[in-house]
Image (cartoon, rainbow, N blue to C red):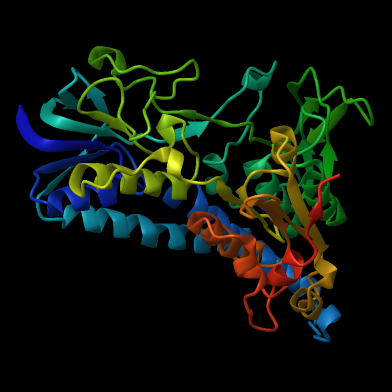
Length: 458
């Protein structure tokens, strides 16, 4: 048995910086990784997928070269092996960086293997037992494989196995019309695949407002992605070289035949083989570890950080988990999960930037509110770049003048949204932004103009 002041299970986005802070404070730290350093973001999530997005955008823009007066001789082609090689190289830099950091960190010992709790203070890694007064669980999540009839008889892909693909699917069928599915849909359509998205709800990204769902749908269908909503009685079967998906949709054929099938219907936490029951750590019905506002579990001395706690499913929420834990333990700064605002992006092109409440949530709250909405074709920067798809929508509390939320779908929306997010964190009234002088020509310069167009919700 080896004693440590802290044991961290997992090297996802919150684990390594926490190890560095704890070790830097003088603690003896162990960090455990069973497979690839860096977690989902580095290996199968943000880093590789956004690298693919960039390659797909290059292909898309090359095909549009004539729109800008640029001549390209010959057909624009995509070398999928080269695309994969570039994606792998970018991920490798990040993965190696995390591993080098951890292995070279003074006061920190790296263990490789599958960790299991033996008690509330003991963690087993292979034949070794590590004991500590503080244990931090950062085990992330993985793709859900839904109970679809016939799925066990066909080959299918998840967001992880998509990373191994170095060929262009003739027809990629994607089950799931949310963030992962839609990003891959546009990526592979731009690479040249036929793509069909199958969604069981009445619209894609149903958590968003209807106009946002429709806007994203228009962008994707405009590029040739087929979208089938209201799918029911899903089933899969092999027919020759094709994978046939039964969708039983109200409109269109009941079957879709494709060469490849991607499952993108959600995530589940990696908590089912962790020995949580031996430590007495409580989980919810979906397997997520229950935590309080400081990310402490029901067991004293055990925290859950990152995707496995169900309090966020993004790299930025995972990193913020580290900041909250470190602040409370080391800085005597009482930070809480409930202090953070909803914020995320959907990386289709153009991207969707989201902050705070949706319009539907504001309406449901019954509070007096104002809203401004502007199509992107009114934005000079977007018009000049020939990228005018989408719109920007901002909601404000009519009494406090605080910004309640924003949905920005358009050029640079993934960056512009931070202007609003920062104002929201500052709890400053929208009039601060209304009176600001922004730089021309930018997308952000239209935000003050939008504040002049706020009107009461109907």
